[in-house]
Amino acid sequence: MQTEEARLLLRRTLISYAYYSPPPKRHGPAASEERQSTYRQCQSNLQAFLRWGLPMPAESGARALMPRVVLSVIGDTPIPELAGRHKWVSVKRRSLTVADLPVHARTVRDDLRDLSTQLFLGGPRV
Amino acid sequence: MVREQVRDELRTGSNATDFFVFLNCGVRGPYLAARPGSATAARLGASAWLHPFISRLQDGVLLSGPSISCEIGPHLQSYFLAATRRASPPPTRPFPATRTIARRLFAAPVPVPVAPPPSARRAVEAFVLPRWESGPRAGYLDIVRTGEIGLSRAILAAGYRIAALERWSDDFKPAACERRCQLNPTLFMQAHP
Image 1: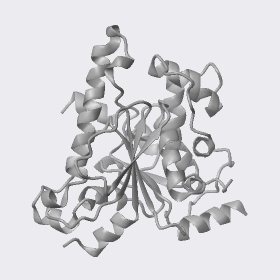
Image 2: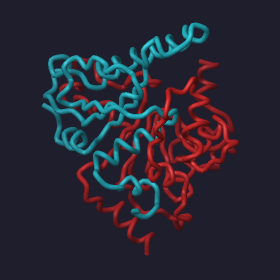
Image 3: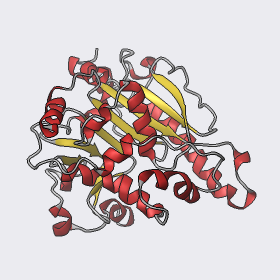
Image 4: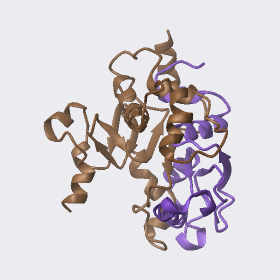
């Protein structure tokens, strides 16, 4: 059984994961090989995160208590395989932007339904 | 007045979500996960890898991550960050002007490109930079400066702290970069394992 501390921590945590792995047709042949290697690595990294960071109860021996996870699928990246983790992971498609912060900011703002992300930053509510 | 309001919000935080973890698919892990089937996994479950980061979010630490780099300026890198809205005690220094870099980031609308950009760099210049008020001549490095480095800088400037898993960054203060290493210790470790 998980400790009360662990349970409390998980309930109070939101994970925002930005995922960008567009299909191959988007890119020309010249730069495609390196890019595709990067995107394949992205897919592999996501699967590793799911496997090690969000283990299924049967894999971890723990009860099914997980943090909330918002998977921001960027641009026309295909929706990844979540292997039964739909209960904890919500998928939202986001516009393409190179920087991560706008993507995460949108996720947090949607989750909190206000502009409370200002609180990280020392600025007033807008 | 604003300063007191924000301090109160940071102390009490009415929303049920206190901790935020931001990462992208450039990150591999978590390597801190408890071994499946182990007693630790049974006790802590998915929180086993979160705990080292979130447990550092106290005593004025607003942001934590795997490592701190001194390259260009002290900052957490990249890209795995844990943040909290409950940092205490309050900052030791007054808040800076409200137009902080980070405030601009979170207040700005998410860019919506009108067509798929041909490259990441051009996407930055076409869609992101104009909305970040960085000016039309800004480049990719400006994104790093304003976003990745700027977030840590804004937090440090507000009197809060950042923390990483590395032992050298315990009780980190920006001056440590000048004393110990002005570059990127993670790259150093990669080059000198």
